Image 1 (cartoon, rainbow, N blue to C red):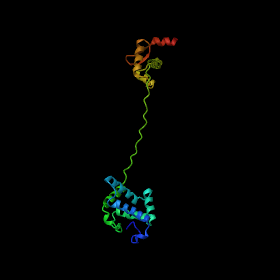
Image 2: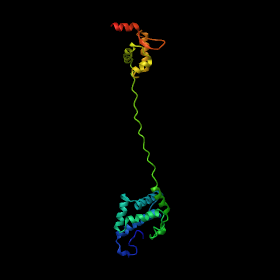
Image 3: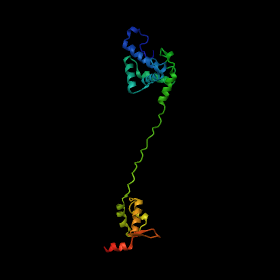
Image 4: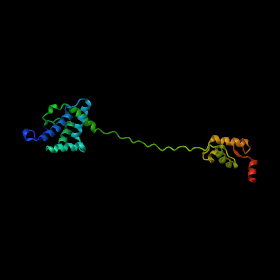
Length: 212
């Protein structure tokens, strides 16, 4: 038996623990390459086959340590056992000829499919691009008195509406700016040139402010 180095020696000379470990190792071979036993549905069968696959093929990690521990306990080279299994998975039909239950290994194709899938190149992991931080637009000044206080000192020289927007860095509400300008014109505080559309302090207002 492939997993039994004492094959041919009288059974009475073996310890019960040895028989148990050999049974576990033999069950793993059957679960991977043969009909999975002691399962009630396909999901359990798939899980048992997958567990046997990792137990018999992993080079490192918990499965590999468990395999080596059991093999060491009965005098089997755990890495050699893995090599034999991998040879079968790679297509060597003779690697299991020493296994006395060879006729029960009827699912080698499924085991090889697991091996191929396990070794298939993993898809490249896409890195998520971190979105650029969004800046919240500044709240514009919309209070009439504040807008008027910002605009009126600027009108001591001719300025278009665009000039006023630029001069205030766009911080003032356009709607309130227009209200302030219309009201100031109505009160005679400022005038607008009909040709250039420029606003400026009314001449009499400018003289009064200069005199003050």
